[in-house]
Image (cartoon, rainbow, N blue to C red; front, side, top):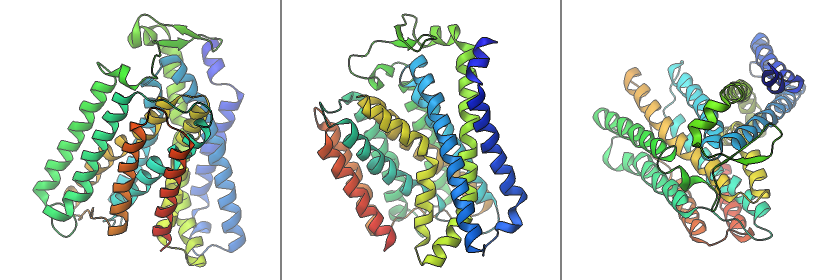
Amino acid sequence: MAATTRILNGAAITRLAVGWGAFVLTLLLGRFLEPPVPAPLLVATLVALIAVILGCAFGVVHEAEHLARRLGDPYGTLVLTLSIVAVEVILISAVMLGPGEHATIARDSVTAVAMIILCLIPGIAYLVGGRKAGLRINPTGGSAYLAMLLVLMAIAFALAPTVGSDGGFTSSQAWIVAVGTLAAYAYFLYRQTGAQAADFREIGEERSTANDAGAVVREDGGFRAVLATHRREIIGRGVLLIATAVPIVLLSHEMAALLDDGMGRLGAPPALAGLLIACIVFLPESITAVRAAAAGEGQRVLNLCHGALVSTVGLTIPAVLVIGELTGQHVLLAESAANGVLLAAALGLTAVTFAARRIGPIHGLAHVALFGAYLLAVLA
């Protein structure tokens, strides 16, 4: 009972009430928020939604950091990553199952997330965390992430326009790619959380967890022993993390129509609204990654950023391909020339960064600059 009270405290209850209350309110006021929305109401609603999302984001970060200390990497960061990515995949799937054609939603979503996670978030993290002694990563874990990303993104974006039809896969190809991608991702998770878990921990880090006071103590029994000893707390914090994260994604989805309306009035390209939504959805991971970098935890930055992208590609592409086949929708995966070059450059820059003995601010500057180039392409 004491553990439950400690987890579900006043701040956590307030965040849950505000987050879910705001979502219910947007549903009740739906007809008043249908475009075109009066400019004062549009601005006020967007400001209110962003404030609620920020409050929930800090709650998600709080629970994620507790779980990370208790479970250790890669398990702690996986809870945060999978909870947000899973909800995002469900929302994309729901959009595809709704009325209208959404042929490019998977391509546009994954590209936006890829450039945010490969360039913007790690770039800021490297600028923050690399100013003194630089950040160190476990090279084997970094190489594993990069290997998965190269293969999964090449199959999704480079193979579809060359061997498929009209910028996407044929029916038989779609099933093969969907099953193969999901199987590869499942095997990656199996190795990451099993025999190769040490490859995704900080260099020289012993298996440890946190006691009730927050101090790190040695754990000799491994993940199962920690789970058995602290099962109630881990489940409680995991459920609270997901319950706090879901409103972020749901409210971001509600913001999409409002942003499209506002961007249309400003003459901005529609893709910019999607990019802003992706930034908001991954806000909790962004905050956690920057804080980890400030604490000198380079491998945790990788686990949050590149682990999230592997999960995004590994779950989103199979989901949309299967839904496309079941509903008769053509899933367009062929990228524009500019975005294709930028994605390739982002993966190449990541490989160069991972090869460094220590990651410093210059690496961060290069990543942020490449994201700036992507932003120029979006605005064009």
